[in-house]
Length: 399
Picture 1: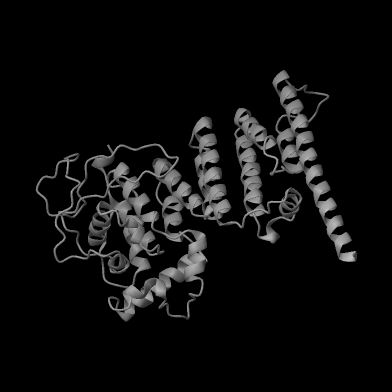
Picture 2: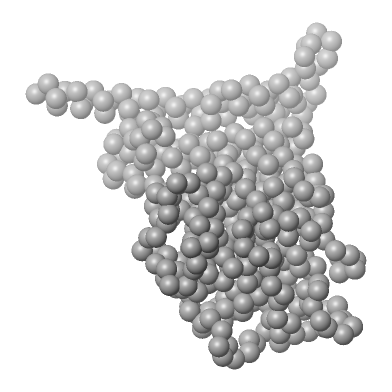
């Protein structure tokens, strides 16, 4: 059983955290801590909360696995109670106190007052030392939800480099509570996260121990990152790992969900499209360099083409056809010719004179040929509108 053995991340997470901080080792947690409410991200299946499992190393007599604990938090006399103090607690590696404070703020509906910060990734990593996987999912997700999305990260912390000291309005609350050593630690964490987001978490989940045994955690991590704009950091490693470890329907569902979350976020940060239809088509035809809503369009195309390749690699043609059909109904996204060539090579025999295609393969070939015409028509309409708008703009300039 899961509770009868120490998880693979128990030792790994501790060693990673020890490298991330220059301060002393983590203090022993108070045994009275009660885990925070279950965090259930949007579009994810509901995981029923389980009883709290005591951490290893606590001074408890014959702890009983599965013993229920109250979710109420004790009176926080003499302990931090302000959102501004959460960063300091995590930097000091006082994760037990940080967890109690987070529960306290959640119960008071004050989570929105917590400023996003990259340091909360370390608190999420600390949660991996729990023995109960459902509990890990809840706490891990809650802390990751406090990490800034990619737009907030660059707008708030972009000035941080390895040679600067961060003392901004965003974290001015730490000026009176952090020592110079912790200031330096915070600065290094931010600079590292800017250059390589979620590096420690990706290393632990994708390259340590036996990741195949912890698929739920990997899926949750990838979906949270996608919803925050870090899709390019997690898409390839997560899909390559899940491809050989999920059933066809489960993997296809994961691809749909990660596309939805990533594109929804991209649309939320992109400038709006022009209201004029011709100008809108022109804007979308200029690609990523225009820094317009075509960012979301290009991302959608990239994710759908990648999904088609992944599904064909396992010969899951049924689900690849669904991606093709969905894109055919989307006038804004045009699949390139090379993806049709890629799909055709999986169903077209190498030597037609020796091997004849099966009836199913022949139907799929006709299906691809028809959809290819649809995509070419969409591309033609887009180029036509772009040419017409460019010509009208040129005429105005001459006048």
